[in-house]
Each structure stands twice: as C-alpha cells, then as structure tokens.
Length: 109
Image (spheres, rainbow, N blue to C red):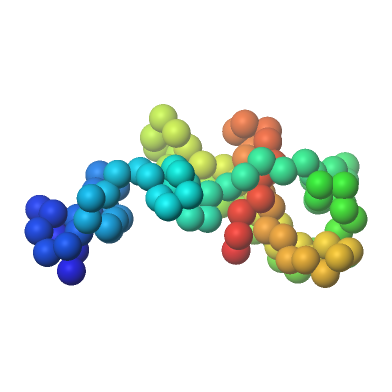
C-alpha cells in the first residue's frame, strides 16, 4: 500500500508516483530514468518534414501522423509533430519533432 506519509510500505515521492520504501533515485542497476522518456534520434526528413530515414535506416511505411500543441499559455509550451513509422527492418518506431527546439526524438507509443 502506498500512502503520502510514507506509512504502509511505500510513499508517493515528489512527483506523485509510488516508489518502494526507502525510495530514492537509485534502482538495482544505478540511477533510474523516467519510463517512456523521449530519446534524441537522427532523422532525415523530406522537404515537407516527413521522416525518410531514422538512425540511417529507411522508413518503409508511415502509419500515422499527428500534432500536439499544448501548454501554449505557459512559459514551456509543447509543439510536437509525431510520426508512427515502420522501418525497413520491420521495427515500429514513433518519432516526433519538437518544433520549438528544432530537434527529433524517439518515444515508445
């Protein structure tokens, strides 16, 4: 059971996510990272901005494209263009371009 006071075997930590009693930011293999965190990726795009290569591997199929524009009222707005892809190897890949930073990232769908 997780409680905000740390009683009952665990606590919610600073971010509202439960962690094991004793908490901290160290897992069994060193420091942990956020689940599903975006990772920088090398993308070659067409003139209209559609990925044609991801980490030097050709894109075989563009399955879906969507845009997320959120938090426009804050100092840290989000403006991302997402692409759900299948690479030549058959691997599924979800990449997005952070329009504000001008960088590409990979993120599990």
